[in-house]
Image (tube, one colour):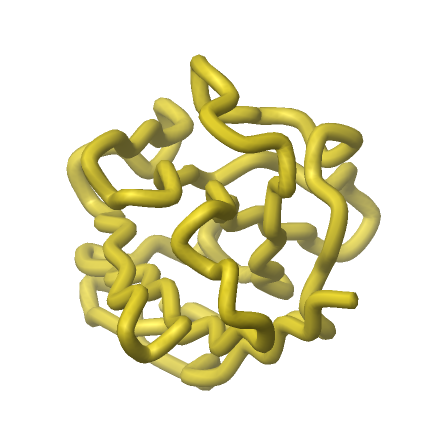
Length: 127
């Protein structure tokens, strides 16, 4: 069992920045690709970005490319989502997820490919 706990959400003005963290249990964290997803009210959950187990590969949805950066610190069992130039349409509950399928390429972009999910953290961007 893998436990994931997101933190760092909150209220921020448009154009601002925020960094989300996802702390994972388990000593095999470096073997998991990690993904970030978000879900706005009344909308489907959508892929935001992902990072390989080693951190050498990342992939982002077009909607956030150039504004969001995923990184990880495997020694801390933590993955981060650094968000800058936030827009009102970024408002959503953000979830991190772990993909236990080792060395999956390309990085998974659909929720069904991820095995464990955190509880989510709310990000609200005001105009």
